[in-house]
Image (cartoon, rainbow, N blue to C red):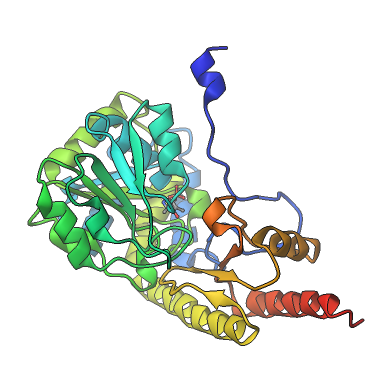
Length: 352
Ligand SMILES: *Cc1c(COP(=O)(O)O)cnc(C)c1O
């Protein structure tokens, strides 16, 4: 095999146990099922699976555009935002290279390596926050997850704007996978700036992680570039059921609001309970919390919870070795998690 291929370090997704009945709080999926309207829309497409899907995915692009108040021609859709990000890295970020923060989404350096793109990071502050000034003056394109992956910390739009307007030739990609749980989207700045790309997914706030639907919103020129690349690679990147499900998910605003509000409420509940158990938490605006407890490493907490049937995420990053990332689940899931954590504490006190 090619030496370069042998040297590739692939992204390692969180565990997806098939069949086992874990309480699954490790990959930031929604604990709720897709809405009835989404299920109905997907079902209606099943009988036509012998026919190719719409390569333009027009119905989905139109509903994304309507939701965000942009033109349809500004929307690009893909097979999960991972694919959208891959095509952005491949097609748009290569020349100048990429800079991101050292704590962020683990897939960014993997794309950079795969496509031989120069990749640098700036360090987050002691409290894990991103200091936008550290990107100032850098020539590379910028990729920021906002709220940030792993920490859930949100960077105000004024900071994003300062990065976008500093150098109009540099592309700024804002990955808003977690934005619906309390952040404000950067889409409102697209009228003014042509070097901004906002990336989103239906995996976290719209119950479609398994449906694989992601999108980018940018200038018409950038959306056109992304489509040109896609048509060189996989024109039917979204299947019929996913296009229809994604469209219905964007249109079922009532269900979207109900479920995101529930997550925000549950996040407050989980945070408050963990704090009263002595955990330290980041100020997460995402559908997960990042938590640490003095005396137990992240790895140990992860392993002991797994033994008790609860999956959380341990991230091997040196800076995160004391922490675990816990997806905000349903109230019931949270209560089981808390019960298991209590058991661990009792075991450590030698009680029982
Ligand atoms: C989950 C996640 C993605 C990938 O989402 P998919 O649409 O499921 O591929 C991208 N970026 C960040 C920051 C994420 O957390």
